[in-house]
Image (cartoon, rainbow, N blue to C red; front, side, top):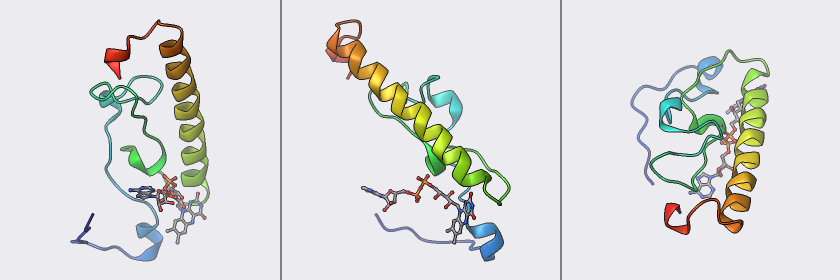
Length: 87
Ligand SMILES: Cc1cc2nc3c(=O)[nH]c(=O)nc-3n(C[C@H](O)[C@H](O)[C@H](O)COP(=O)(O)OP(=O)(O)OC[C@H]3O[C@@H](n4cnc5c(N)ncnc54)[C@H](O)[C@@H]3O)c2cc1C
């Protein structure tokens, strides 16, 4: 996917992306409500943090939430609690 930079910033600012998937578009497991089975984490999310370790920490933390969400979703599907048509 071609990506055109229209407003690059200095490295102190450019190490973090801005924008992304809005939290309102996901459930508490970071699964897209419009696309069940698709999960988001890290820089995919619409959040901004100061540099200095907070970015990696939040990426790892949101990855953990999404990973647990994937597992819960798969277990729910296998047990029949989530209809396959929701996939
Ligand atoms: C130079 C620099 C220094 C930084 N220093 C720090 C720091 O000191 N502390 C800190 O907390 N944060 C730091 N950050 C920010 C931090 O590294 C990022 O916020 C974090 O790594 C983002 O993690 P992520 O998993 O969301 O995305 P990424 O680490 O970008 O991972 C996304 C992955 O998806 C892969 N990918 C992309 N498209 C596809 C596709 N279509 N199919 C399959 N795979 C795909 C990419 O190859 C990549 O491996 C720094 C960033 C930069 C650039």
